[in-house]
Length: 238
Length: 176
Image (cartoon, rainbow over all chains, first blue to last red; front, side):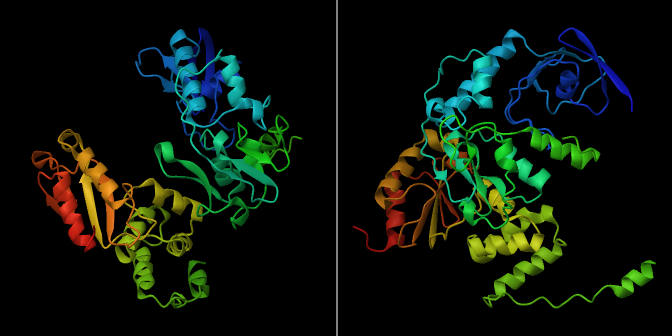
């Protein structure tokens, strides 16, 4: 496999041909913030947090779906990118009802950590405050649409790793939501195997274990990594 | 080897008719067969289903999901993504108001607002008696005759809120 050399934040990096900019940067120890990215499932470039600047291209490119090219000059943390990332986070907060103080994932939330990392101390946009439901019909898990950022991780994990395809996105735009089977209560979704991978993948408090209360929701994401490595590389690394 | 495999293959079982006895399921099945039950023919199959049944109910979506061997969530997701697909029965008559830029500037928003008020339904809904469905559309390409309204498939030029109400009132029968 041909190797490509590129520059990321002034650092010379060599990467394999098929790698994305995100993978190349992570291998080189450069962190690019992500939200919708999930190891082992198809990248969809939905959250736009991994946008990077590439010299010679005026558009910003999502690092998770941009393949490396020879001689690429990538900047991952310019002032312009910081500004946009903060804006994206603010829009995510304004879209639904993200009230950290009463959220099951308070303190263990990727959205919250990203907001803190980017110095997001307030939201400049009006909150939409939509009325979203909470689905507690499943025996083991709960789903709170108020906390959902529509990253699609649960859906892709269900599709690519578990292979059940219970979850999907219904509607479009502002009316999108994550549904089970034919928009049934989760507990009534026949295709659900109750494997809990979606709960492991959720970055916010949208999916949680029954009985978890404020700040109690922790997830062992290494379990997902374990299963992906086992499946793809036939290596069982506990 | 190939010959042996071919010999062993079971003859295709005659497809059992749909339990409801509705012939339209058979037609839909034929349509799916025409696409060799390919999963990426989902949209075409949904089109045919809506053409046959008028709207896509839960049983129909399950029927399609089974036919194309897709998870129901994918079928539901696609059916709700496109405005064209209706998951609820539509009214006997349909009134489509063009909300494209030209029509909007000429007052399509007022037509829609007044019809919504008169019929007591929102855009995209059907009156409880099942007589009229109110739909708004993006530009229908009839900007020269703005504001345009489509009554049961007939594009009508330069409509006002009163014109639209008169037309819809005719459909509704005697409405106060």
